[in-house]
Amino acid sequence: MTKEERALKIIGRLKEEYPEVGCTLDYDEAWKLLVSVRLAAQCTDARVNVVVEKLYAKFPDVDALAGAEVGEIEEIVRPCGLGASKARDISACMKILRDQYGGKVPEDFDALLKLPGVGRKSANLIMGDVFGKPAIVTDTHCIRLVNRMGLVENVKEPKKVEMALWKLIPGEEGSDFCHRLVFHGREVCTARTKPFCEKCCVRDLCEQNGVENVEK
Image (cartoon, rainbow, N blue to C red; front, side, top):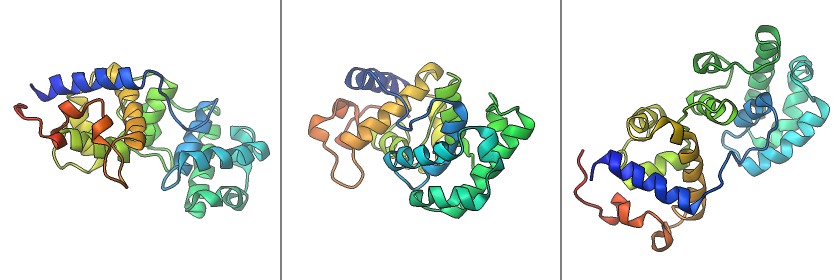
């Protein structure tokens, strides 16, 4: 079985196990997902979802948030941690959206990468969830699980994992595949406890469980 074959089998199993998936950050406009993704660094999605309610109540659109004082933003987002840097990035990002893009989030990966506080993971999330484009979101769950499963070998750098997965995962499957890895990583293939391999839907395909005969 090649890596490509294994990847397709894993995709199929995860689809059966988690048929309905999506981003766990709450948003109804693209710019809000951009804000939430920045706040989610070293913070849980659940906490971000609570904090942004207060943020949007005071600053309900791009123009309002772009015109806010950084200190005002920081005061609200502080519970997410790294409040000063996150507030600066959010403020700068919203100003660029206002001044250069008419308040809209650009539908271009390279343009997204130029926004303050936006890296490859965030840009891929926006491309996949907002614009429905091929995307690979290499968050901590994705990196941990694809290493355990043997789709990559001892690769921890997000960009390198992303590039390796582009060769294995069909473009139209990438975004949902990564979302399913988040669900699986939280419920079964956990990080802080021993993985619950006995109830894993891909245990017979997982390198950690001794799968052999995989062509490199």
